[in-house]
Each structure stands twice: as C-alpha cells, then as structure tokens.
Amino acid sequence: MFFLSRTKTGSLWSAVSSEKASISMKIDISSPANAVIGRYRLSYQIYSMCSTTSHSLADIILLFNPWAPGDDVYMADAALRKEYVLNDFGILYAGNQHYIQGKPWNYGQFERNILKTSLAMLDRSINYSKDKAKDVSSRYDPVYVGRVCSAVINSNDEKGVLLGKWGEPYSDGVKPSDWNGSVAILRQWYNNNYQSVKYGQCWVFSGVMCTVLRCLGIPARSVTNFESAHDTDVNLTIDKYVDPSGVPLHQKDSIWNFHVWNEGWFVRKDLGSFYNGWQVLDATPQEPSEGSAKEREIYKKACNKLFRGSLEDSSVVSDEDLENDLADDFSEDSEEEPQGSQISAQFKLANSPLFGQDVNVMLVLKNATSDSKTIRINQKAFSVDYTGTAVKEILKVNTSVDLSSNDEKQISLKIPFDQYENSLTEDNIIQVVAVCEDEQGKKQLVQRSIVIESPPIIIKAPDQVTVKRTVQVEAVFENPLSEELKNCRLVVEGSGLVKDPLKIKVGDLKPKEKMTVPFKITPYTCGTQQLLVALICEKISEVKNYQSIAVVKA
Image: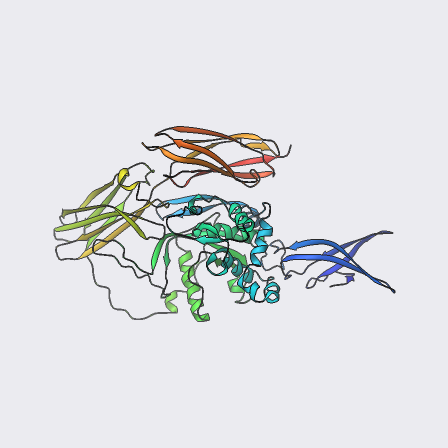
C-alpha cells in the first residue's frame, strides 16, 4: 500500500496526481526498478471522515525493463535491445566446426498465452512449492529468475516443460529435430496441465529458455559451442578412451560436436560489477553448478578461454581480451608426454555431402622423417549422435602404404549412400577414424566428424504483404533419393504470420519426384516477420527453410 504523493519516489512505489478536473483526476503510478515481477492487483482506497471505500482498478503484470537505467537488466544499446529482447525469430547453430548448420527457430515470445505460460513456470518451481513467500519476494532478481527458469524448463528436478532424450525411439512424442519453435512446446505444456513435453535436446532447451527470458524482459540469446567438452568429474580434462581400432569406448567424459546454451544480460550484485553483462544459463539437464568461490574464479577464466573459441549465436558475439592467464592460478611441473609416430595424418573433405550422395573423404599421410616407412592403416566409419556417442558401424577398411622420406600420400575412403542411409541418427553425423601404425608399433589416431547435409526446401512467397489480407505461399521440394519417401507432411510456423502451426499432409513422394504444396497465410502483425517451413518424413530429417516477409498496414 502507498499513498498519493506530490513527487515520484524512485526507490518505492509511488502515485502522483498529474491532472485534476472537477470530478476526476489523472494519477501516474510508478514502480521501483527492483520491484518483484509478476501479477499485481491494483486497487485504490478513498478515505473520508466517516468511511473508507475500496475499488478495483485492474490486474497488471510487471516485467523486467531493459529500457530503464535503474533496472538490473538495463541494456543501453537500442540495437542490442531490438535483437535480444524484441526479436521473436532466430537461428540456432548446430553441426560441427567444419560445417555449421543453422536451425531456424520461432521464439514467439509475444504470441498468445506465452507470457501467461512463462509466469506459470515460476510457480511450478521447487522453491515455490517449499516457500511461496520467499520465492515470490526473490523475483526482483534476474539471477534468481534465470536459475528458476533453467531448472523448470527441463524435467529432471521440477517435472518441467521438456523431457530430454538422446536417441530413438521417439514414437510417443516429437523427435527433437522436428520442433521449429518454442510456442508449440510451451502451449502444449500449459494446456496439458503441465505434463512434460516429449522430447528435447540441447538446442530445444535453449530455444525455449530464450523465449521465456525475453518474454519476462531479460535480454537473452542462444549460443553454440562447437567441439564442446563435457567434463563430468570436473577436473578440467577430458578423458577419452578408444579401442585398438579407434572406436570410442564408453566413458563419462565426452566432447560433443556442439552444445547450445543461453546467455542472459544482467548485473551481478552478488559477485561485483566486474561480472556484469552476459551470464551463462544452461537449461539442458547435466551436472549442477557447485564449488568454492576460488574454484568458480578459475572456472570463469576457463570459460573465458572457451568463449574465445568456436562460438556462434543469432547475432554477433564480441570477444574480450583476457587480462590474465590460467597458468597464474594453477601450474605444476609435469612429465614430458611420450613421443608418438612422426607421421602426420589428417582427414580432408571438400564439402559436406548431401543426403543421398556417397561420402568421399581423403586421408592425407606425410612422413616427416628421413627414413622410409610402411604404415598400416585401419579405417572405420560409424554413425554418431551430436554428443559424440558411437551408434552403429558403417564400414571398415584395412590397408597399408609405403612412404619414403618426406613423402606425402592420399588414401581415399568412399562411404556409399546405401551403406550409411539406415545407420544415421537424426543428427546426420558420420565419424571416420583411422589408426596409423608404423613398423615400430607407434600409433597415431586421427578422426573427423562429417555432417550429412539435408536436401533443400524452397519457399515461394511475396516479399511484402498487407496485414489481415490472406496470401498464397508455395513450398517446393524434390525427393533426392531413388526410393519413396513415406508419410511426408509440411509444418508451417511464423510469429505474426501464422497464429497456430499449419500441418499439411503431403503423403508419399516417389523417387526423384518434385512436389509443390500451396497453402494460405493471413498476416496479423505489422513489421518484418519470418515464415518457417519444415518437411517431416520418415527417411530425412532437418528439411527446413525460412523467408522474411514484410507485413505493412492496409
């Protein structure tokens, strides 16, 4: 409760009379920058000598405000606010360091009921169930809200929004690669009485997290790290084991081809101004963060090292120079590593092959010694998921090659389509490995992940349309295979263009058949909008495209 006053009070709720008439007055109500976000019921009371009367004005929702200099999420640059708060579409990056693949994603933070769902998430947390008053009173802090959202989005602890799954079968849910945005996921969770939606993987968790943070007013972005080390025992090393032929053995540590997390923009009053800015938040269920302040300081520097590596997000990520080296914090004498073979080896690939094509990769060997060498080569190819886990062996080739001093030779490896087509996971990744052994028994392991590119789908739509006027759009796709594609369907999404996803049954596509599927959309929001079209079928995954459409007033 607060009283009508003459001046605005920045640190407290205030109500100031700005205009008066004979029977009415205008009152400006201001909230402090650190007010708790969420739902409020606004009412007023009139006191007189004889009585007090109360009247309800409205139910309001208060959010974080990146436009307000006093708010913990304040972002001064208008262009950055436009990208990280207002943009309702983005690209989530996947693939590997050699072939970066963009996944179009409909964030849809301004779509119907997404704010209601985002606020409902806060009330589904463990913290809220344990102590409602304490939880709600902490919602002024974006650090706290970010952690709650991260926990509730995955179902590990809170019976949350998404259930993670990293392999077939997905028949009782949706395959992670078939999701095109956050709106369908959040609506399904809310409408089905908060039952976890099946299924998600890292980019799906990140896309939903980005939607919720932006919806609540926290600037946010999705960030991809390639060759992403997953260090389960927290010793800052990755322990990797392979069998004599180079195939990875089961292990706790792993290096994922990519991992997608989030960053939220806010100050860190708990840590000090040095830490203000982008904060890492990861909704993918893994190990919880822990450790002493000293350990966190070292990990922060390790993360800075990491962030200077292979990073992609839906906009530009600026790198900051490191002022200190990790060696200042932990250094020790170490024994010299044993020398391996003086034969250099690497796989080369001209470009990522299209699904339906053979894969041709070249192993390049060079003898850097003054002696001739005979090298025995064991090569294998197997499918992996994006976490680097071997799934199924595709082929195995053993050969040998003679190398004279300073000689270089190329050994070709062909992986026919008919050998890999039924072995791939939805991630479309093949890993090739070679174990090269000289006469002295010295071995060298070389490996490379190859992303199989999905065939294109073309969108034919006007560059400019008028709001609330229906227009026709076409999707064009050609089956690249010499076999039938079964149970094909189109899914069409796009904030401001399609209120609910369109699901269009296409049926079966004959070998090499070209289809043209017409459909209609009625734009409902002015501005530049993104139309996303995906083809879903049993054989091929990740057939997606998007097109920008300018929606203008009538």
